Image (cartoon, rainbow, N blue to C red):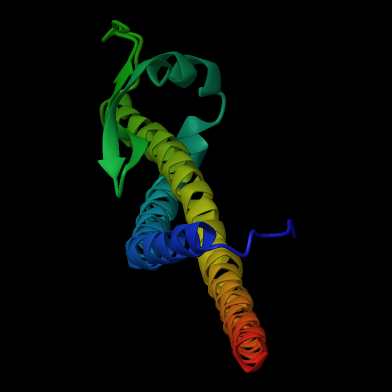
Length: 205
């Protein structure tokens, strides 16, 4: 740690720095708490979407035999044309928010397409939407978790380094200034005593 100047100017600077740290720390702690809450909220959403995805997959089981051999054809009907997201703001963090998942418009031949396609395709598209939603939520969680990590580091820096350091610097400077003042008083007394002695000697002579 760099040496500090033991002056009144430096004492003033250290006191001002300490006040800044003490003023900013509650704001950082509040932001940390908010981020923790938002991360938990996104994780709950992730679990909910994952559960919905599982339930939808279970619902497809009774079509398992019908889907066999139709993968390529069904892939055309569930191919994503565009994923629409908008920027959202969560506790000061810009995150993507899913607005829509658009699929390529494929015209079906009603005479060659099995009737059950009308029911299966929307379900398969729903699965795709859920998969996209999971990716967007995972991105949200990653961005929020990174901001939480940075904010936690700042809280620790203030609590464990900056504030104790400023307090210690103030203590050291106060002791040094006190010692200097005591020494100055002592020197003044000695000088006064010498002056009085010289004056007394001169008068006596």
